[in-house]
Image (cartoon, rainbow, N blue to C red):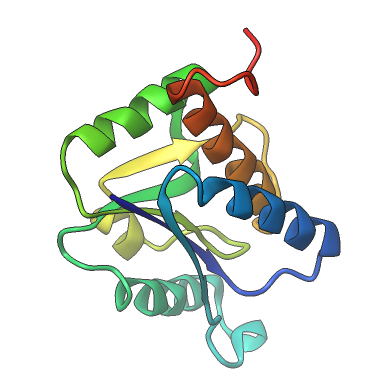
Length: 157
């Protein structure tokens, strides 16, 4: 199974970039992993929020295959402990899906189109984080999930 991590736009936070690079490098030992940066729509600053979210959805959906299992990182999604997230990941791996796609939307979240396409929604906290910072938090949790599944010493419980 390949894990794809799609994010809208580049980050301008160097510490996020460096932290993600560290965890993405570690993830290569566990899974075929790819991060895709989705180009934001042109003139997005001049768009109404609904139009912006729809354009972002179009840019994401052209890169998603019908057979992909799509998980939106959304504040209204299901919350898991790290161990529960590892079990979620294991369950997806056991089903034989080809691509597990995690998506971080833009600053305003997802359009209805994205919610309709999603197979699952995941919240990393009841708190709200910037769409840039969530990349690093998710990268660490994904790495942690694999260490839990392999009984490695990274996760303490």
